[in-house]
Length: 278
Image 1 (cartoon, one colour):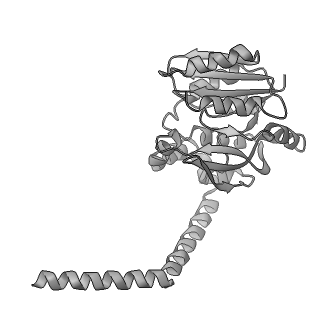
Image 2 (cartoon, rainbow, N blue to C red):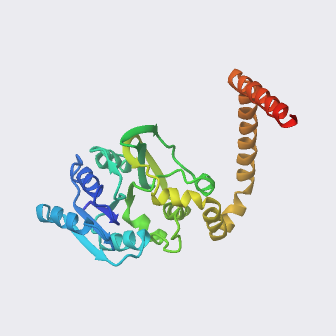
Image 3 (cartoon, rainbow, N blue to C red):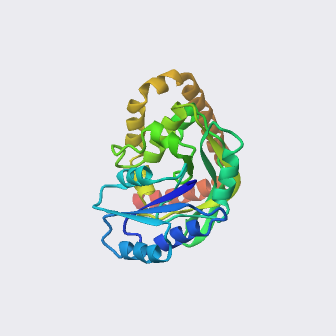
């Protein structure tokens, strides 16, 4: 068996069908699709069962709510494929991703995962298409740089220890990517926009961003030796970013729109002071 796809599902009745369809419509047919219902309280499980009736490749795992890490790990352990395709229940792939990702794997045996470009879905519209670059361990320690939904070698996932349930507030994909890179694997990139990420205000990713500093510190303490080893790289990156921000700040201050806005604010403040003095 070649490719097993996994989707953890939680209260996804409105989006899970789109996610499953995007996998069933891949130009390289999947061998197995494992759907984990993580204690949904809506009709998600009923939707999964309807798909299972018409597709014998689908396996359903129904569990009490234990979080995305436990759900993914359980699916990976149950999978038979040499490759594992991960997908969240509100996102979807374009039809050629698996075909092109497998072709990328064939080019380099050191690839532990292959990702692609992505676009965000905001209010039903695709915006901000982006194609990532290949990432190194030092870069990933500073900024994730890899998607959470991509095609992995199953052996890389198992050797890295799967997802860490202790990353319960988010960045569990980032944490896993660090451990895969530590093993010497690389991440390949299909340089096309073939993944669609749904950007919603109540998404788990947005909740993680709100706790960004705390989660980054969790990674820092977990991989302290690596952070110490690459400290010169990080310090150089911080200096470059600080210089970029200073130049951008000066550019804004020198812009006509800023000067006009500043003039208007100054006039308004003067008028306010006149009325205050009266």
